[in-house]
Length: 123
Image (cartoon, rainbow, N blue to C red; front, side, top):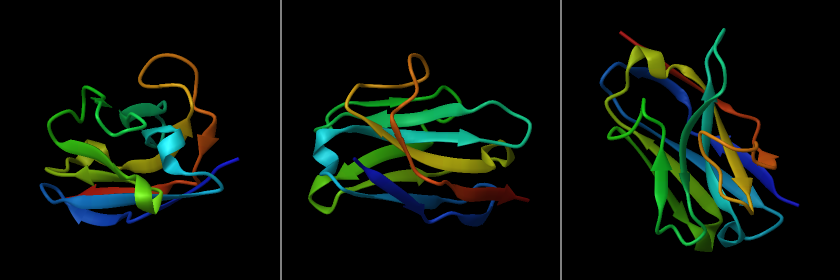
């Protein structure tokens, strides 16, 4: 089993940057594909980005590609989401996710989820 805990959310001005962290316990991060989803009020859950077990391959949702970067530090069992050039529409609760199977915008939902962290972009 895996437990995921997000941190780093907060209030940021439009155009600014924020880095989210996801700490995993119970099993090494290297065993899993990991990534991020987000959900804004009144909207469906949206895929943000994911990274392979080794960190070699990354995938991003269309709305964040070029602005957000997913990375991982397996020795520390941690995955990150670097968010740059934030927009108002980036405001959402961001969730860390993990699964032995790859995941993205399509396919089944990941098996393991964190509790989420709020990110608010304001002008």
